Image 1 (tube, rainbow over the protein chains, first blue to last red):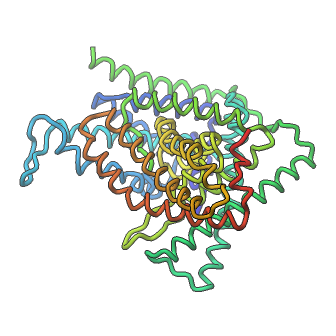
Image 2: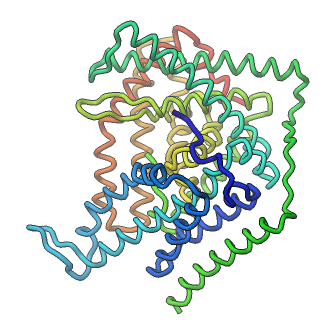
Image 3: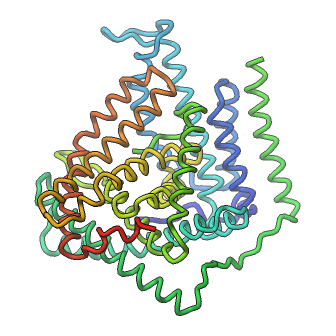
Amino acid sequence: MIKEEFSSGDSLVHSTDPRIKIIVAVLFSVVVAMLSNFLAIVAALAASLLLIMIARLSIKKVFYRVLLVNGLILLLWIFLPFTFKGQTLFVIGPLVGTKEGVWYASQITLKCNAILLALIAFLSTTPISTLGHAMSRLRFPDKIVHLFLFTYRYIHVIFHEYHRLTNAMKIRGFVPRTNVHTYRTYAYLVGMLLVRSYDRAQRIHNAMLCRGFSGRYYTLSQFSINRLRDILFLSLMLAAILGLVILQWKTIS
Amino acid sequence: MHISEGVLSAPVLVTGAALAAVGVSVGLKKIDYEKIPHVAVLSSAFFVASLIHVPVGPSSVHLILNGINGVLLGWSCFPAILVALALQAILFQFGGITVLGVNTVTMALPGVICYYLFARLVNQQKGGLSLVAAFACGFLAVLCSGILVAISLLFTEESFMSVAKLIILAHVPVMIIEGIITLFCVAFLRRVKPELLGGIYGKG
């Protein structure tokens, strides 16, 4: 269930230096979140779609992911056209839909999906362990990097534990329903996960001490940006982001 | 309770990121290198717990558990939640980079509030009172998160009022379920592993 679905591949995006991908992903997300010009937003969406194509990801899988995340956006579409004051666009019974409301809702939808697709293209195409090492090379605080890598490592272990416990529950005839018994059972399940996690953490710590852990976590992976394509990729992306800023700024002035 | 990318305005995003940075740095100060495995394993336990869907009538909700997270971890729940949310963003695309700060605050701040309000009460001798505190902790944490989500929406655009109200209203059943689950979970931990509730993670 917890799979890094998009992380393996040999496309241009997959093989770019992960530090570049992190930097570009952050810059792109921040810039797109600030956009309000229609042309700029559409250009951003087109850019991230292009990135998905370059990364040669399965369009079906990406589409499914994006669809799942659009829940809140759907909620906004139900309300925003009617709560926004402005020019009347359409009327359904007592409800008046305004042009501004529809524009605002579509602006949010496009921006959300543009950032989402970019997130998939840049970060989900990198294995989590590589991301952690790249974060460390980018001078993220050591403790955050450790926490990030350890958490990812133990998500799998604890998820496995969770599966064992739910299997045991099923074999004993547990069927979830809306009643206190169900909630109590789930609460005990969570409690058991916490207890086992605690014991496990204790053992991990002991094992680390045995191996001479002294408070530093070394990363062996070395990255180097001397390949021409990395530099080319970075400059292209920066140019694209700058392009978005110019599109936005030109129409404001 | 994630806010999607592209919804909030720049000032709200920046405020969220700044508050999250403060919370995370306070939390990190409390974690020494010895405690990192503990916090990480607990952080992943909460990540997995958030994948558990609990039935409510014909529908289902997933667990949030930020109340008990706060009670167990204290300020360290800020970095723990930040990391869990970052992993959710990368693995499932729930949330994202620019809303990471806001989402961390909406989940972790109620946790810290619960830590100060309930950590002692939950761990005390009298069983009855500690269970009432546990219910209140689960209930209040989700309520506070809902209010924080509503506030960040309203500061972005006043027309979000009805959406914000609906979000809080829709979370009322979640609050009750989180309260019940937290209650039973605390009852379980009191019997099985009382030292967990003794603030071994939160202190220091």
